[in-house]
Image 1 (tube, helix red, strand yellow):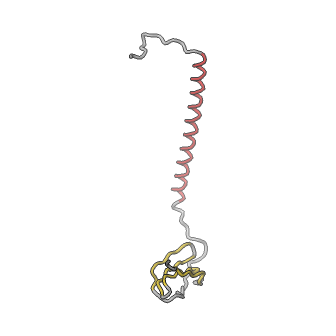
Image 2 (cartoon, rainbow, N blue to C red):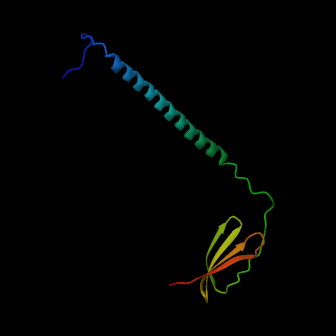
Length: 117
């Protein structure tokens, strides 16, 4: 089936169909504008994060040096740092023990013995 050519004139649209077509065109413009604003916001957020990634200034105050005394006798198996807390996993005579120390002061904050069932 061939489409209309330049030689054939198209019949005028029914007024109801013309209104539906105009409403559809308006909704498509609104959707495209919303999509454009959303994409622009995402690109601005990415550019902001990239621009701010070079501002890794050290925290306020001077560097600290501390001595952490391990309370549980045994072998230190794993360590982890989160903010100003140091977590030590120790394989000792009681089994595995987790000690949490405050880094600036070196004080023991908490201790947990891990038991297997």
